[in-house]
Length: 433
Image (tube, rainbow, N blue to C red):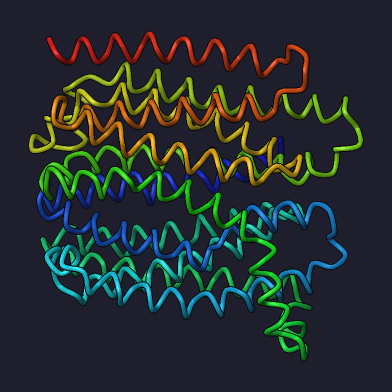
């Protein structure tokens, strides 16, 4: 609980700098300009997956099992990230060459966001390492400081400027400072990593590390691409204005969604070390499922109780067509939180390939259902498609975790999926009236 308390502090900071700041930026820019900003930001964050490469989940599991070799492990991963950064640079140029990004605005803003995505990916990895050795306090300190700097730098720019390029530059500066702070503390907690980085077999070890984490990278890529798939679908079929509307709400959803991986990763090292102790594993599993289910239910209730007047005060009059989507956002969060808990159980048991395959199928379902529903329901169709894809993910994970006997998680999952079908049907029918 002390670890979760530290992570709660970090999460609240992320929520403040993510949710509140993005709402403020959306209000400042308006739907059209905000749509251009979100499109370039989404491309940058998806390409950053080439550097993230699933290392966050991998290092959490491995540090929980072999802390005595932490310096060598982290050195190998950082060298691998150096090689992967070359691929990131190539991908950034290739994406810029496509007409969709050029039409989004100034290339300088796109470049700012690409470098920013690289910096925040590296900083977040350094902070994940603190979790693996139980130093949650260090991550909290870094995140809180980084979030404060982010707000102090970006909000004045958003207040005075109506250009998304200026805001992108402020994002870059604040995230570079966050990376510097995180790196300084990382070197204090892991002093042997710097020396291990210069061992003779460095490049070979980095290549082996890339091969070893390939399935983790596939899972992380599918999770992130699934989060941004609606951006590219809406941009392609509906344009920048509807994209700005939808993403003003979804950015708030993603900020809240960040709570899930943080809480889940508190449990991952412990669960990985309890595979030979079934009773203790089951006890921690119940705690994880109930905690994340509670987070999801709280999110759903908050969206159901949000009135139009409250949302108008937060987002402004320009975003009023967005407000009826919030119950769908809450339902999506409920499913995503529960799926995260199930995903941690799969990773702890060594079934990472099952997670990757499920993510691929879920992404396909999201794209197909959104493409089919958008002509009929517009943005509501995209929200429903997200709920359908998240429901499939929960069902897949439960089946992958089956152990031949009724389990606590199976009962929770059945109730959750049944409630999702009923509530989605009601909300979709109500929205067509």
